[in-house]
Image (cartoon, rainbow, N blue to C red; front, side, top):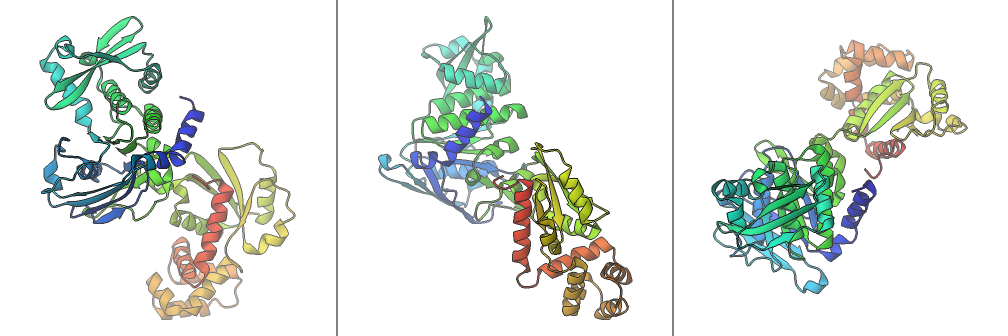
Length: 482
């Protein structure tokens, strides 16, 4: 599967899938052990629930399934952990299906069941159950009486891609194990024939997922726990491609949980629901979260790098604070370089950077008073301007002087200390004065800058100015749309 095809699948999931397939419009939960009460409004038919280990992804999937299943559908294995929980799910269907679905779950009352069918696919179902059955029964005995069926060529190619093999043919037999209809597989590859009995766990899991999604009834709902389980990271792109292709082909509503930042990075933003821990409870987002935040929680390393050229150490310290506050470093490796010869050196560096570098962005970050002078610079690399009218040192100290009580409370000093520091440095140039004020307050200059910046931003109108600056910086780095 080529990158272009993955991009097309992602685009189709964003555009045409929602109108063509069942769409979960809302999911409300109350009294679920370990969770804060909330309402999720994803409004989509391809949902990815992600988060770290132990945040409750499987529990949430089981509750969703319990709100959709009918009386004849098997119950989740761990119904006891849903004790006392209340859930309500609303599903919108395409116009041709004539009717939507509203399911309410409590442990004492089973919902009517979604009309097109729902299936929960846990980790055990696709590996342990089959391996357990084959330990007691011979493969040939299990397949007796079951009609032989085959994956079509397209599906064989997809499974080959996920497993990094070249299968010639994959056949399966549907047999009953307990109260479940379970597939067992037989493979032909390079003249070798083998079956589920001797498959690796990861390979068996992929075959089971391919069977589940390719044989699902159109417009049905599939809930799958960690499709990437037992697979190396290089296979995560391919398993996303397999799931996406059949979700679109059969107009399915697909809900999965995942630890994989690769899968999370491929799906549309509105498809992501991220669970995080807050104390003893798991918290779900009120609205759509930034994908960069979610991917950072999952441990995805940013692909893009940026080098920012600044005029002095204060600009560097302020930039680091703003970048951390607005989480740009979640999406980008940022290096800030101080040009000791000021704006002139920034101009020289920007003009002499080779063109055609796509993975690294070079940006000049100048004081606001440099707008007019830099307009004549001939550089292809972008320039952004810090959100200050005067020199930063002047604005920070003026801001502190205008509200002494609030600023001293912020920095943990007495008003008398600050008044003395400000008055005893009057008449010094603004660079020296700023440094000496922090020194007289017995504060590290970087820590003083951190507090001064936060105090300055807290004044009316400045939050908007900072947001405009951060938007300009993100655009200059090339992060818009990530």
